[in-house]
Image (cartoon, rainbow, N blue to C red):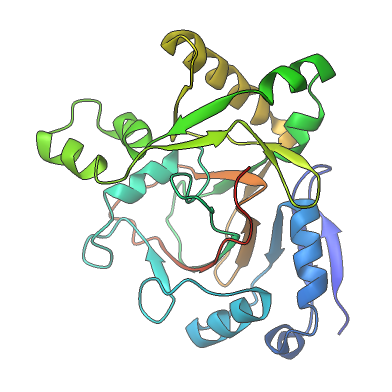
Length: 270
């Protein structure tokens, strides 16, 4: 079976169908990586990889970060399954992973193992297209700006009145300064936004936050967004360098379980 593709929206999201063995052998790895960079999100519907297969497939696309158990990180709000469950509630807000790192992760692969009855859809917003659609004068102005990203910024959306212990834990992650516009190795440019974006360096605090809010609203218009309605066994990959993501709220006791593998970052955010 050859690799076949179907674009799901004009600006982001492509479904891929291919032979399982070919995927596991890496036969289509180069084509998948190319498509991922161009389309931001690729989906393998109901491919039903087990953990060993998901890990093997991930390794055909890049170096896997050793998270969780043997590279498999459980994304769930069940504290018995993941001690970071409270922290993961930050996923309800738009963000990119690793925004307080020098080199954000390249991409993540997420597979559906148990679904919630309501909510739990995952949304992805292309971050190249919103920049490309801005007026040239605004692009030039934005390219001069730098943004401070903090874990506290996104966590305060969940816990507006935190305990001293919570604040201490957030401050264990140092703030990170990144350009508002990421110039990629490919030459393409994207906006670096999301709920970890605290403020703009050198700009009045409220004015800077207003600009960040306006840009996030612009970048998450329906024309830039793909919403994935999960089916058991789906495997989805998103380009963390070219897309923001969030999950729609679901009940903590729903049992929703996703297994994630993550690829090591390959380019510094400059």
